Image (cartoon, rainbow, N blue to C red; front, side, top):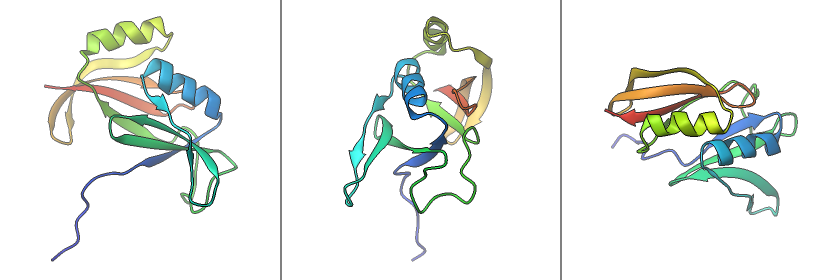
Length: 132
């Protein structure tokens, strides 16, 4: 039998400033800051939403092993939401987070989506989408 992947457990964002990134994702996108302790007793930072987790590495102080070229601002994430994009647009405006594009039709992993695009403080491209 050929090995298969079931799901994504977590991904890592290398960030310039953990506090600034946590504020953006928690206040702007409704994620939860979730520090955790490794089996080796190290306390690390993460963000959670639904059953998903984003681990945060401070640029220049990454935890081994890490990507070959960890760089703040190099990610492009698509996040699915059941909240209508019109509500997201209003919420992001109240948070002072500009939308760089959208709403626009796109194709997601499971079919058609409608998306808005914004950037986090490091310049990562964030796509918030509704299924169509």
